[in-house]
Image (cartoon, rainbow, N blue to C red; front, side, top):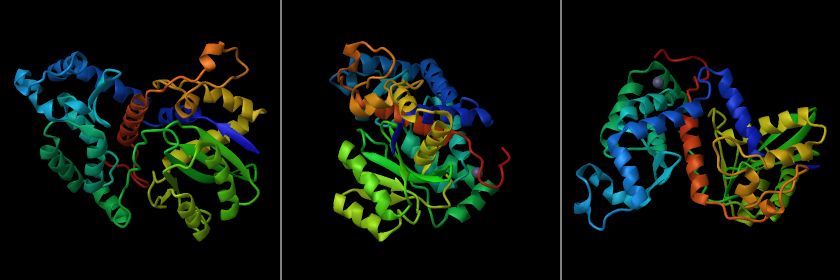
Amino acid sequence: MHAKVTGFEVFCLELEHSKNDQNPHFTDVTEELLKSETKRDQILTDLQQTIISGWPNNKQHLATNLRPFWTFREELSIHNGIIYKGQQVLVPQSMYSTMLDKIHANHFGAESNIRMAREVLFWPGMRKGMRKAISDMCDTCGVCAQYSRTLTKEPMKLLPIPTQPWQIVSQDIFTHGQKDYLVTVCHFSDWIEVDKLQDTLSATVINKTKAHFAWFGIPEMCHTDNGSQFASKEYEDFATQYGFKHTTSSPYHPRGNGRAEAAIKVAKTTLKKSTDLQSALLNYMNTLPQGLTYSPAQRLLCRRTRTTLPTPNHLLKPSPVNLAVVTQELTLKRAASLLYVKPPPTQRCQP
Ligand SMILES: [Zn+2]
């Protein structure tokens, strides 16, 4: 059996999950706050206007308050009212400490938090104060100290944000109704492939995976956990032979393979609910998730696919997808998920 699920449900489930926690709609709240504070920030408002109207030929022709942005002006862009430097969110001054507090709330210890902040956030002169601010917070925090000791051997690594479809995928195994399934999810499009497995041996998993690579090409990177079928020599040989990088997550890291875990939730929910799995998934694949510009089908295939709902023919024709927009949305999603407060496994830190 071969089934397809989409990122729409991943998105819904993430939202559902966040509703049950203490920060409902955190993603939306962060985005809205960034947007409104960017609007209230005079320098960033001027900067937005300059990005839109174009930069002068000479730095001297630029207003003094915008000169700190001159050297990386080519990297700046605006999406949905938020300014980005490459893949980093440009944080309004009023939110510097708020964002660092949110980074710290993960309690992964100073070094992990500093890496995280550098990956997703930016403001001019950030390097100066940021390291000290985060170090001070983590050094005086008991939860960070305890958590850092647990994770010393397995420092937090963030997977790169993809810039094109099927560049980075994650895989995992799950069981539903006493049957085993393989899930494969594309980090760029949230497109999910679900395979029913006869067994969970490496050879079986590799065979299913080869079929997906035949359809969509070989990804640059495939991320899995340390399950026996992935940690095997057979899987490593497969990676070498096909020429993709195989990375694995630590069993101790709570977000080691978050994308695959989210995809599994989607797959399980769909298997539970739908009598016609394929049809249900086809609809999701063509549904535009809230806050995103393209559906999973558009992000992966550059087109909508025909469903049982009437769709005008012209909408089914291939149409270019703005890859930069997708990457920016992924960046914001990552920033939000990193900043989304999750307590460490055993206890919650007192603020
Ligand atoms: Zn802490």
